[in-house]
Image (cartoon, rainbow, N blue to C red; front, side, top):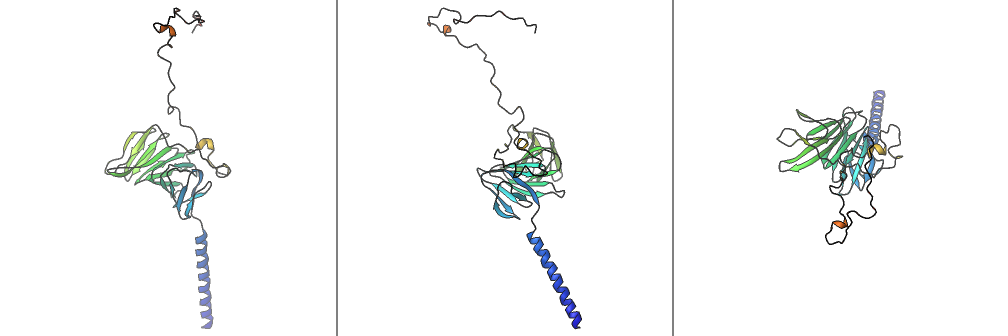
Length: 269
């Protein structure tokens, strides 16, 4: 009986030790990393498994983090082969899909997601709707009207699949998918301006210089495509006015002095 009692006590002690070790390992284990801060301006807060903290260049964004920008702040997150730019006064919840791709749920404001390499099917969601980002340059908004808040997804690069429950809509480049409550998802022309990629990038040796990096400052801060710049001024419709055209000027010359007309040149074109 004594031997059996000692054996049971030893087994219990061993099990307790193993359980304590497992709990200790779980306590120190970090949550999964969704991406890292690659550009930041102003103060940006994160709240989640890593605690409440102020983000800086190179900081990790973990699955379960809620990232919030203020009035004059923005943040860019390099998430695997995608880049997410969060606008001012916005909140996004970061996560990972079952396949390990970035899962970004917009709670407030506006976000732009650029997928350069088409390696993963990232998820961009807002208020019960979602878009599959795969080689896209897409934006998501949370808007509010009398009907309540609703999401809008816009696309400029590749067709963007948008879904809400059993509804689906494929938004071609240059269009937006709007999912108002109690209405089917419908498309509308996209606006000309996109959320600019903030130029306050972090040093390349902090985020963009490591192995497996998919971005360069040129890729991330690429200028908008032609067609979005204001048009150049056209040629004047009338020749410049001459002082001699003013009655009473006393000018008798039909042309300004020093101007010599040249005969036309036949170049064959």
